[in-house]
Image (cartoon, rainbow, N blue to C red; front, side, top):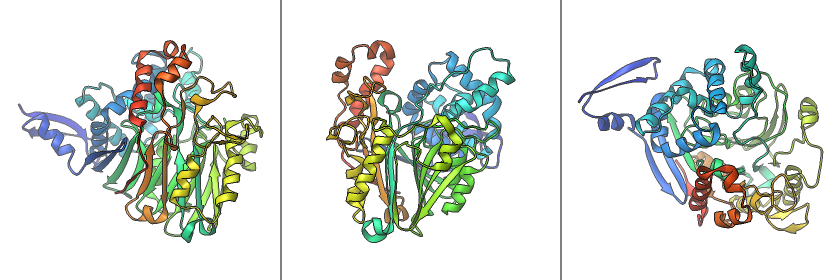
Length: 473
């Protein structure tokens, strides 16, 4: 039987691909120059070609990840939250997405449907829009006379991650060293154990940590072959501009199409919508310069240096950023998990300044010193976060979450194939014990349901016993 398929090509628009002897031949054609390797809990995937091809390859190799994140972030098909998210995607977001990324998402849809995970383009756009959702939700309600109240974002929100970037006299050899660990609930983020090395037909090659359904990271760990090194931690704040462009569009464009800190910041900040405010840590491996940029809505507070150590832990310290966000940012509080980690970062800066290298970066991301309790014990306030171990802050008691990965790199590795040392699971190597957590929190299973219990066990299985491991282009 002859296969006929409609799909996007780089020149734009749908064309028919006919004459393939079988579906297998069509898939082989679309998977050309791509690959996947499993390594110590990670999936290392190379995707290349036109936007549609790259999307197809991403969805094909990570279809289970994509299906899981669609459920975890958008709820089941037909639910109120999912339908509202799809409506916002269709009526507001789609027109803001450049054609290249529209095509990439179409490729993801095509692959997922061929794999039996049935969805459409509005599911994928809504998934990518999770961090921007609240900015556009009220506008959607007004435009379409929606009577339901504004729905709070269901997907994991702000206030997660620990990160640093150092250079010059702060590091061994004077080169940039950058590190990051991602925080969230394990049952909603276990699908992020993918590193995609992207080889597009336009722009720079780049690496992004993401899932099977997202064209951006969300975890925000990137490098490109021009030597840009990028990570962030999210901040609290609610200043927004619903006429602005979604963050997921701006960050992918910045990584793919810029090669200096100036150009990166220009693309990232242009037409900002204020959603998902962050402190971005940016390095240029070619020059050794690093920057921190606290990006809100109209404010982007930037500090730059060739000698120094910037660190971030979800705490908004910049005066301009705090002024824009007003009462939505927290005041200094020794028990606040962002502020306590900021205190710890300042201590580690004093201890390690001038000696920071890859190994030191791994050690800092694995740190368990709780400055509030003044003891070495994992908690919601330690740089290697363990919400499941928290016994003090009621916000996190009984929550299965925390730091679930670790990544470190330096400027030499970034320029030599976007290399990095990564660990899937707690950066410290401690095992998350799902049985023990469920026994200690007997209401969790009933509150979350059997699918999320299975997701929790999946994370435990994925993340147990993995070492730090090296990956590169």
